[in-house]
Image (cartoon, rainbow, N blue to C red; front, side, top):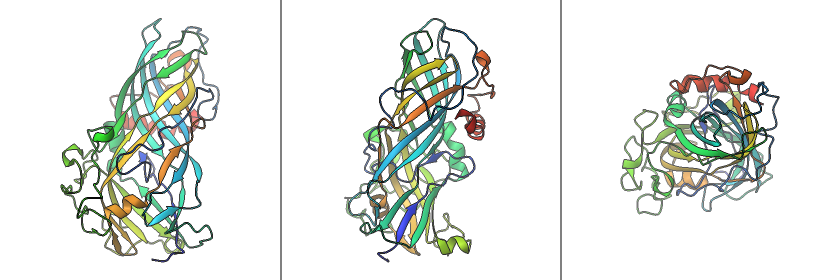
Length: 373
């Protein structure tokens, strides 16, 4: 392995993305950084244009909204990995799109919500093999590509509900929604989510043949029974494709054989099996009955529970893959959200949202996301 090699991790989402997760949390179950936002400012995910709405002075949030969010990350490295984030303390932005149905009785300051994840996109990260060498010039562009089965699964599997309150019934009143907890690839949450036990004999850095098949590794995964094949591909948890290309790979249009990684292909190729949790907390201000904006707080938690990855035709162990993934810390105060009504009420845009068809509605939100900004 060449020490001068530098890796740039690019999160590739496909045409209708779902969860853009390459490395967004501690693979031993720890939460990442702890937050996606901060202290109650307005402005949404960058302000956006004025949302059409009638002149009613009494707030009525009952209906369907698209959720557009922007968040800021700083990245760190786990000790002992094959790669290190380089340069140190990089910062970059990611985005989140969702669908939220709010229920509010007339004249009430209490609200209920149901929500669907449509996309979660994480930013570009650069890293070097071994110790950080900012002067390294050889690059590999690596990323996670979401198979269509996972893209289609997210709006159906990643559902959440919550309750909240309004500070009043006039425009400019405070808005607070309790955490929405989404999971995919597991029916567990938090510390109960299945994890890869890298310190157990037979599950470590040199155990390259373990965790590479469609069977969950009972000896290495803490709770195989807690995994759910939400993308219905026969592998534990949910599966993402890993593709890493050198400039030469890209010039020669070398294919990434993620599903058959022993075949000649890109410099890095294969798949990783994950379970995922994200729990956004929304706190902000009502602009009108058609718009809410404010700060976003969240933790993302994920665990690699298997991997079939190759670097230059050499297999990489699950533990090596876990240790090489960077840690994400959210920069509080720099992350924002915006809820925009899309059901046609109060003169708003009508995107014909249908919670009975979350995949179809999410595709509409994704296609029209620029109208939210």
